Length: 104
View 1 (cartoon, rainbow, N blue to C red):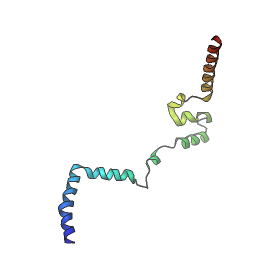
View 2 (cartoon, one colour):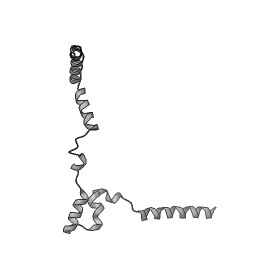
View 3 (tube, one colour):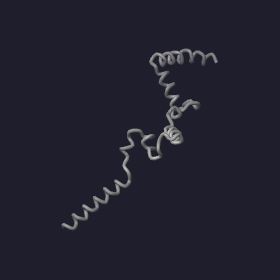
View 4 (cartoon, rainbow, N blue to C red):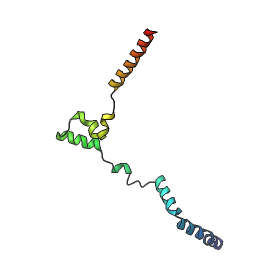
């Protein structure tokens, strides 16, 4: 028992002081928090629930049902393409290929 005390004092103390001075102790703590986060608070709980806000606004009559994407996605809703446009583009490409085959 006395030997383990002396080994701890002569090996463990300098290593602990070195880790503290270099800053590895904080790195180990932050890595531990990443692998084992606090179960009480999750980061995703802090985000706004825009769909719930939309349905509350819908009940009050402030928005219409067709504005869901605009309300939830913000300014990016116009960048979304509908399937109808994609189908039309594919049909145009096929028509061009058919016309090219006829010419040959």
